[in-house]
Image (cartoon, rainbow over the protein chains, first blue to last red):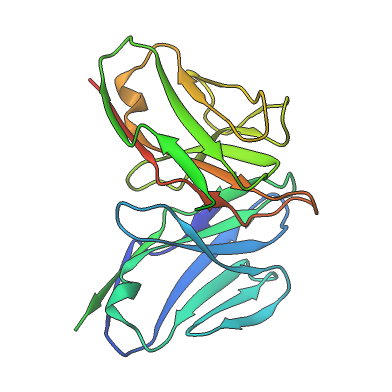
Length: 109
Length: 115
């Protein structure tokens, strides 16, 4: 079966750095996506990785290792507004998105 | 403002009733999707449409139907609602004119409670 694993919840301090991991087992691979979802709101697209390595976008970076079936989302200089759930999704060989359950990130002052 | 509009935003429904969730987009995206989101589970695809006039079944299609008469509208119908269909429903779209993409644009969601 296809599976996306990510921690259920993480806590970090304002101004710090946090790394949210995602491991996947899917039928084929056509890219990995990270989304942010604030409570009660719609998910919004954050990043896309299809090749191994690090993609940086401001305070957010996303890393991919296809051989290990592993990705992480790195958030720097954490702000209170970063409190949200972060969803990892993989596009499989049929170009369908397989979603993880999400990681709820709690930022403390 | 361009985007996706869903209606209603919230609804309480008696079991056995028929319900249609509406979804309209103004971005001229060719692909549209319906997901349900339940606590502790990832988003699960109900139905999708790659282009107007075509639809396909996702991971959890039973009890739901969709239609895609034009580019902008993609309604989801529950023919006879059951309590297990209590969930938050998200409509999404993507511009797949250049090929499949996982960059989806989501509506604000419809919270449905079936009693």
